[in-house]
Length: 446
Image (cartoon, rainbow, N blue to C red; front, side, top):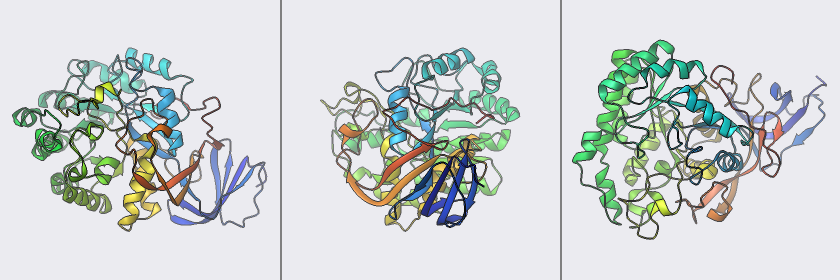
């Protein structure tokens, strides 16, 4: 095979069959060969990784809030995708809310795509939204190529994306079952949150009490029940309550079509270490106690939790209320897109997990859940999307060096292990100083 565009040789390459020394051949942006490192392959460009570098599949982050159009001062496609590329992420799927208009009609999807066109350094897909009154729009959005539909069971934080009632979610799930589209759900119960003490002031424990585990557990149970009765595919977003793990396991044993994600901040931080007034840590559902965190890690290790995605949800400094430290008033969202990989690896290696585990959680399974069948693995026939990762490098996060729009993150000043040395998209290195080459993806054509 002499007509390769690219040949990558590395002592450590993570594929679906594990980690080992390999060479990876690429033609027209697609992987066409995976061979032993001394295979007699030739290419117009040959790259040999250093001994301290590992070739990982490009990560897939299926939970990113870009917020553009409508709230570009929070985040935009250019800044979000540069941050993603710097973090080894080659594909993101954008959430339907916090942009204006939200992605709940085909017209709104068209606006979003026009906004993103020519401004993405990585590939970008889009979720649709399921809100009151848009049941007739779901099929049209599905036909237009969204990857599934997000719904809330309580106030979303923005007025233009209202929550569904239980009956509304049931009707949406029945419609989407017939389309084969997943319903991805922010699972917190509205009544349980309303009955909890209101969040106010700078004490983190007061904010934690305002979003109790019980609210999350009730909503997860509701989603499981509806998935069971309708036969629809359901996905639990950003699981933070380890109490829900037994019912998830039980549902899976019963054949309920259910997948589950968690996020780096739930695996890296604990409530006990969050200082009063540190609103950069505020997210919903909240970061819980250390014992809860360890149970989430167990759920990830045994497969109850399928994947880890960022839930990158940035905003302006003013909306984080950093001056007052009031958890009741501050926007709830963690900005972490660029550091998600080292944040998870730092904690994973402490617990004995491998880079193969990491690739499965942060590339393969998010790609599978969204239907991105040419992403997420180093495998013949898939896109040549790579992350060159130095797993033993250490660094301290400096928020001034992050590429997302507002330089706010709870990771600022945190020492992490693992550095992204390069990111490749369809066989070419991503250089955020050059013109963007990211594509806008549609379901079935990605």
